[in-house]
Length: 474
Image (cartoon, rainbow, N blue to C red; front, side, top):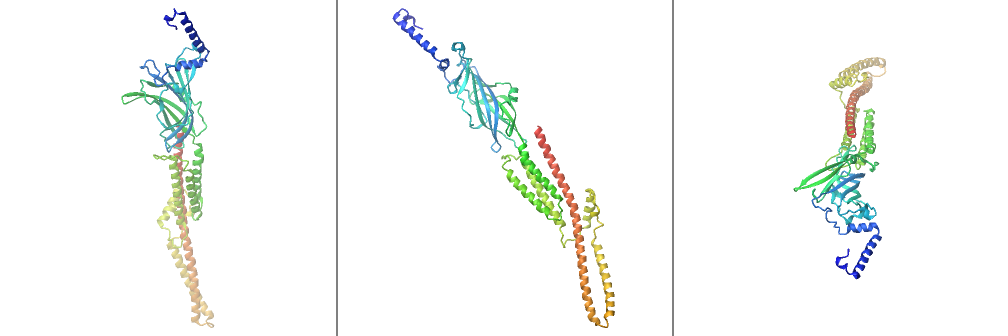
């Protein structure tokens, strides 16, 4: 506008009007987006909260969409996720009339030129590799839309006790790092139900499955100042199929082979070598899977306890096999089985175990030491009487040819050798009876220990299967 004092001076008013029209015409000839951007940024201070009345609170609306679970580090208690993060707030200094700018209702402005709220994630432990989005959208009412993808590396309390059927609940807490609730407040852009059930952008092909994202608003007081925060609980579930196939099934197969190994004869050394081979194979298996199991300084997953117990069961099985083999091993220095052992093992335990072939383990079929001694004395007496009769007959038949003294010495030597052979054979039969007694006792004890071992393994397996199925359903 030309000042009033120049109206009476024709030589001045004409050039002034010409200059104003030239500037106005030059502005009209510029692109509308450039004019709008220049006028919005003219006199704008990005370091000042964009409100005309400082008592008004700037409300920042937040929305989060989980795109992928990139990694779960149980040892360091760190969760790496990739999210789509959106912010909305009103900038009262960035408003215009769309009619004056060819009905332009929104414009993109560099983020570094305007005021941006200092909303951060409290659980941040590392800077993620996120792409730099240099622009924000602003509409004619001053509504700013800041969309950006973020790789979030956050601390999370991971519970691995139920591995590989574990659920993890990690939170992302968005709050203003400096401003109180009187300056900056946070709110949820969408409804909580929509945020919770939204899995439209999640990559559902990895190890982890997204169950839901639960938002929660909270206001807290610190040093007499009130702050607002929006917490998103990201609940994820591990898919256990890979670990079940590569960890649980091989262990179960080895345990089944250990149970089958009990059907090998206990009096042979093959069972011992077979179980030692299984124990070595399981040790190699544990070394291979040790890198797969998650490890923390505060706890051990239940599957690790399962492997340790399976190893202990294999050791117990090997120990039982060694004891049974030692019991039934044929040795000449073994005494007879005590009578109380016979009554306990061959009668009561066989009845308890419902062993059908009772004749094989009957006490009557086993010779006692007294019976063996009586048989030996009877046989020796009969042999001595038989030898004396033969000696007399032999003397009568050859008395005319051989002197009586020489024939008596020869016959005594022959009889002595015969008696020695007979005693050896009877002693060998006695040792065989003793070995048979211990073998029968060993077989019955082997059946008893095998069934106890089988019941323990089955009870342990059913307990773990019930616990894991309950966790998976929960």
